[in-house]
Image 1 (cartoon, rainbow, N blue to C red):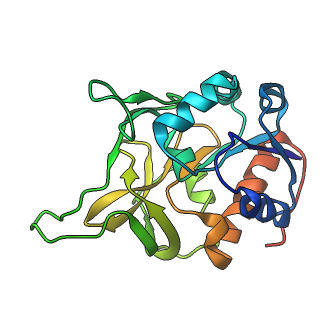
Image 2: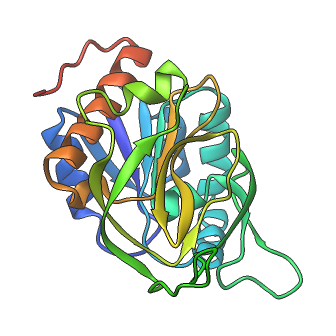
Length: 228
């Protein structure tokens, strides 16, 4: 099974590549729209600012290719900024009058992590470090399968200053100052986003990547098996 790891020229993506390879996938790191359209599955990593990343994806022709692949039901995983880009827009480094446009796979605008809780107590922003991830009660079976073999409340590694909006697409939450979506899913499709970095999250992160590869393989009918 070929997983295309989208290279939009922002940061080091080698750790994500190694994690997917360890999960049993054949990984192609590419910035070519044709590779995205031909992929068995797509992973959009996350380094940088929303508006800059969105503009680069558009300039490279990757935004259109990603929308087409996702519309066709190709398995997809967005990581950190990659999850943010799934939404309609984002405020990070956007102009003052409008958010920067995202891929539009999910509704809503990505905004800044609040620096205080509801009682006015201060929290550090960016949110950096290990934090627990809890599944939303009643989450659909497909996104729950992304967390198979991972205990509810497991700790993953985060580093971010912006967060996704609360929508029905939220399948897991984390609290830093206030509750925010730490995993989302496109309804009825094997397409997910995670706010944390699974490639930096030890055994739990490796398991999540393996689960994604297995779900994608099952969807594409390749019969691949992971090491878990």
